[in-house]
Image (cartoon, rainbow, N blue to C red; front, side, top):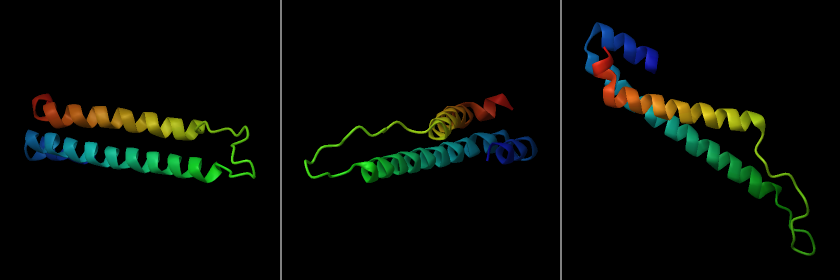
Length: 91
């Protein structure tokens, strides 16, 4: 999205670059919520209801790949917001 917005910003109007920043933020937020939903789903699925009703020593930490995806989405949200707000000024 950023590359397409940059191309349109250079060819058509600088405001196009800024408009595509809003789409970057939108898709990054959708990714954040999907990541959170998946993490919570896996967490709830891994909880066991033993006979005593207690959870017995399971590892509930997210995987390294999950943490990397989360970091990438955070960076994408920040970059998209900056492009959204100031993209036309950059060009």
